[in-house]
Image (cartoon, rainbow, N blue to C red; front, side, top):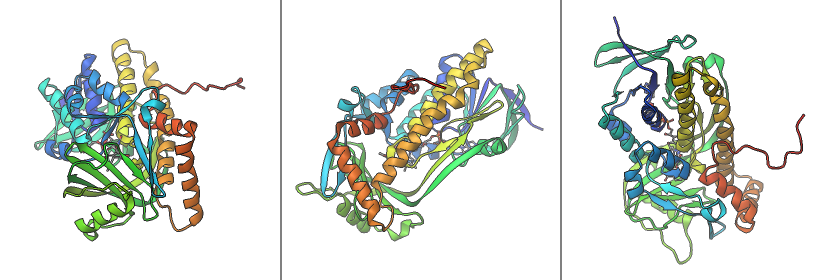
Length: 403
Ligand code: FAD
Ligand code: DHB
């Protein structure tokens, strides 16, 4: 026997997508229940993204979780590209209409959103099990799950599948979806180190030994990444080997990379993946459940937040006026932005990583990088993609007609 509960929107997954959606809906007076299969401490400790587009920061602010982000987040107006022994600054804000990025960890975003939800006394259940979606082709879909040994059926009007790449929502509608994907023959080894960042802006480094990235989490904590083999094992990387490899790849005359204790480490695979459409019946996929980008363009979390702002608009319209115009257009509106970010992330990845042993590839990359730091038009294109394009920017500027 299962106990029935009702809500307007069932949200599967308490990552950035699910939590932000729950806050956007609550602000509009729409009820939702968030179901998460991991514990609160696990979700809050999972180290991932660190770069928020200005638009993402504005959404978080609009749902009332901007206070700590403004206090502790660090606004950046540029990034560095390093190659052939030189480092060049790309002045993002100058090139992209004054827009900037905020360096603020995904862990902190998630903590802020969870706190806001729980402080408001709104339903968010951790450590639920056996989650499954049902009747999504009807107007009374439901989500079944167990909580503390008890079975529940959450009956709702729509389900938001915000359960990440390995969740259960996308597989439940797989027969109705097309998927596109690309695997890369390399991965990232990422560390969090107890040391003041050696560069005050991010450094994306192309090197013959492989890509490296210098980022940060706070004035005392550095976050650094190294390209490694796709099937690399963490055991093979001692602290000394990690620092030695970073030192070689980011070396620059007159500048030193400071080292510190390694607090966390992990290896992340690289993949591009898109599912179309992002909806079937009353189930709407958002964030990593619908698409994955390789992390080089810093787009994953930002896409997740972009999706749920569009989804929230559609759900609010539907649940307050019964018009499903916005919901019907959900996938198409998201996918334009998703494909743009896919192309940008693919391009950043293939421009900056060591792709193999073919010297032709390396010459193509170096030529592209030289062009980026010598042509304002090329740098502007990088900048507007990196800081994030507005949700609906896809009006052709040079159309001469249509068939
Ligand atoms: P997730 O964060 O994956 O959340 C999904 C949630 O659903 C999880 O909490 C999961 O436990 C839960 N769940 C799964 N299955 C179930 C189930 N059956 N029932 C209930 N709950 C379930 N993005 C950026 O924008 N900028 C960056 O700088 C950046 N850097 C990154 C660096 C690394 C090393 C990695 C790994 C990723 C990075 N990303 C970055 C990507 C970003 O972290 C993800 O795109 C983002 O987490 C997506 O959010 P989400 O809510 O869609 O999915
Ligand atoms: C970080 C991660 C990224 O993928 C990126 O492109 C830039 C920064 C980070 O974790 O800080």
